[in-house]
Amino acid sequence: MNLRFGGITVLHEVGFDVEPGQIFGLVGPNGAGKTSLFNCISGHYKPSSGSITIDGQEVRGSAPSTLARHGLARTFQHPALQLHATVLENVLLGAHTRLPGGPVEWALRLPRTWRAERAQRQKAMTLLDRSGLAWAARKRADELSHGLHKAVELCRALMSEPTLLLLDEPAAGLPHTEVEQLIDTVRHVRADDDITVVVVEHHMGLIAALTDRVMVLDHGRKLMEGTAAEAQSDPRVIEAYIGKDAVDDAA
Ligand SMILES: Nc1ncnc2c1ncn2[C@@H]1O[C@H](COP(=O)(O)OP(=O)(O)OP(=O)(O)O)[C@@H](O)[C@H]1O
Ligand SMILES: [Mg+2]
Image 1 (cartoon, rainbow, N blue to C red):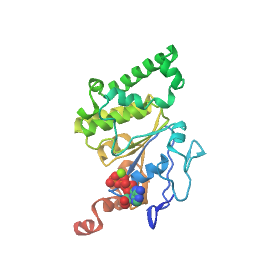
Image 2: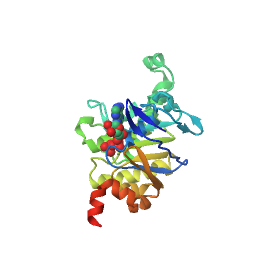
Image 3: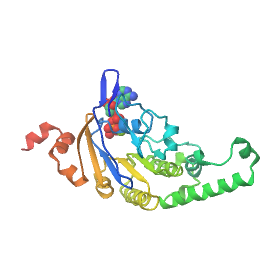
Image 4: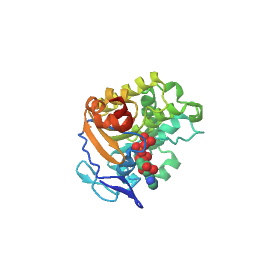
């Protein structure tokens, strides 16, 4: 797949496959193209050429709403929560694609709709509890740290019951103790919810703990694909992270 903006090529012939049920890591230095690649998969950017398939179906160029119907959900590097709404209300926003009935039924508050609403509240609380955030459910989002916004956003993404989840730097801004909680949550997401996960992260501890395979990007190109341990010891990857001059100086 290729992605170009004007004369600038952001992604050059980048390709990878993720098996169902895998946790796949996407790593690389700042500006490597990781978020751009996510934007292509989630329909926020349209690749200039190439192909993107989910369960064998071509989805390249589909709108984000169409991709949500294919079971795709994502979080963003810079989460945008409704700051004046509560954490619980923010999580509930993730469910709106799956509510039964239309606006008229909602306005009339028919039994079917309030039963669905109650079930969704319970589901949202279960997700928050599993992420160690039940205590925050009734707090306003702007009372929480940036790192915890990412954890809330993950719960919001899970409300749509995705089969494929893209996480863009979920550990950024989280204190060390919260990273352990996040690793635990993502393990549950795969094992209990049967969700395939692709995660962008600079936190190599999280990548090593969670992923089955990783792809390393640098300057919009694929450097290598393998296990996290293979990536961490690959000279091309070390060079990309610390720069060739530093490698030569150390030699
Ligand atoms: N809409 C756009 N228009 C022009 N250039 C873009 C656009 N989106 C991304 N780029 C460029 O693509 C390159 C890759 O950016 P991207 O945000 O994908 O990197 P990243 O790997 O996610 O980096 P980071 O680790 O810092 O989040 C950058 O040079 C960026 O300026
Ligand atoms: Mg990014």
